[in-house]
Length: 184
Image 1: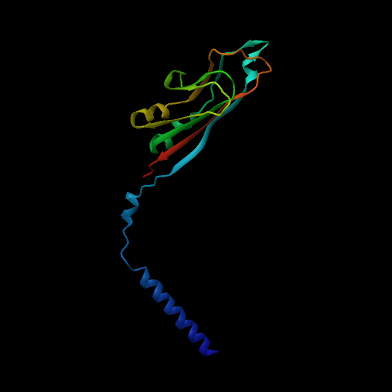
Image 2: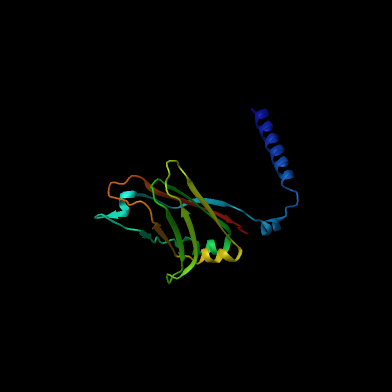
């Protein structure tokens, strides 16, 4: 029994000595001052799927549709201080036999436009034609995004074959944001 106590004591002192020795090197705590993190965040921005018949009301075509969601995310202190670059990606699929334009207006707190993006969308011709666009905000134009409070999505139907309340197809938009940060 005495041998077991002595062995445990010796083993404990040996372990303490090893751990004490390994922690005795010089540590440079100033490295924390130069630490730089570069996270990348990908998120959905907006999406819609408008059937062709929704462009017609009581037999009359509605050539313009508007939606203005609030997107006050970019003006938070974290974004303003750490956002380095942003890519906005848009994908549009039109299965309606009409041409469209999809326009986005980035609005400030007074609803004044800061920036705009216009995407022409060809009419459906029997085969899928995905329209894609990537808009990059970096440097000075990143401030437009940081001051954006709302994005107005405006869909304009251009001239073409008439639509009815039984017309087939739809206009679909999917979009995402990829935000690149530098956190010091």
